[in-house]
Length: 305
Image (cartoon, rainbow, N blue to C red; front, side):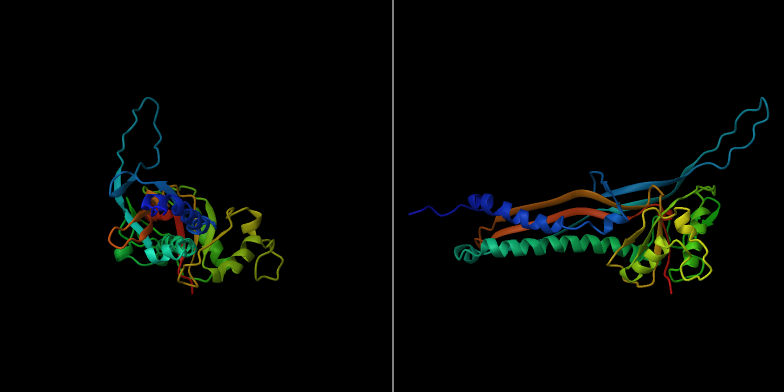
């Protein structure tokens, strides 16, 4: 009579099969969030703080023989990321194993588990933009919404919100690009931000493509050139996030270096173990991260109309 299979033997046989099914879904498609958010390795603690600094004003002229003057920068605000664990599990009962259904059903469950983790990460990332015009609990480190007209700097404020809400069009996009060109740092100096891409919901992807690829101005019969294309603005095209909840909101992402981030504290872990009380085999997947933004200059936007 054959000896019963030990849980360690079961795990060594079944876990690689479930991992393969999981990975086939988890890595099947390019993540939408990665078009907008840059992944960074988190630091080994339960939160991560990034100080946002201010520096100096314009350098003054120095008459011959005169000494240089000194200025002192400082911290304008702190942005805190708090890591959270996200995960889910399923169990394969002893009855499933006895009846020989554990592989087939386990593979199906593993695929659904992978999609659950994908859905969570994509939704959390999209929600940063879904709440871009809402302050309060969703404010950035500077105390206001991601897109606002009153981001504080040393002497005054700056805006990364289109002055008048507008649908995505040739005119409104050009207005936003002009606004980006006028961006200032935390001391009020011009910083020459470069626009990289349009960020839209699925309903705006076709309009974005027209604006980016048309040789002539969209919606105009005067045969004027499309300067967005001729100048080579928005070189990274359009990012489409299918979990954006507004059909009208749109953004232009810039090259501000400390912008949209996903801080990964612990990458994906998949494990399998037995349950002594029920004789089930349990399979789980977890990861730990936070998603948000540090410098709001990374994303200029409008709720649209």
